Amino acid sequence: MATPIEDLGLLSKCSTADMEKLLHQVADSVAGHHRPRYQDYGKIWSLDEWFQVIQGCETYLKMAVKKDSTKDEMKAALSGLSEDVQERLMECVSIRRDDLGKALIGNTASISQSHLTDFDWKLKLAMSSDKISSVQEPLVNLDLSLMEDGTNRLVSLELDKEELRKLVSSLETANRAVLQLKT
Image (cartoon, rainbow, N blue to C red):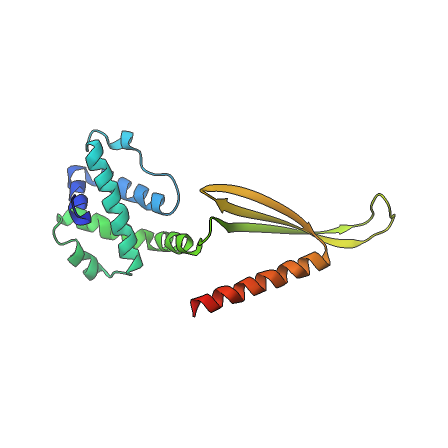
């Protein structure tokens, strides 16, 4: 089993343009987007080498961002690699540092099987119902986008004032509990 740095040495088998393209595709993959496809690089690496390259790139990108490595620290960590590979890796880390950092924080923050990824809300005024001709009750439509096992699920809620107050209170309680866990 090769070390991640030895795995990165396999990058020298491809052209500079392919290397840059692959590194940014791996960064996209770490950030939660599409993974690079073996079909696009099958002429360069065998299947075993492909898995080693991808694993090595993912590991290095995550560690460089996690440790907030400077250029000098990255250069020292990559000292066994060719100058071209070192430059492309450092360039990718510097360009994609924010995206990778957000993805790593997001992965860490999702401590349960289901977590909130986005929300949207709308305020409505119910003017009447089938039983009462003039209600004039404010209602909030809340759409929650949840990530469960890698798939998005949309949950829609319609809340009146009291239900909204209870939801906000519950979320504040949960936030206090999380803050206590952090300390």
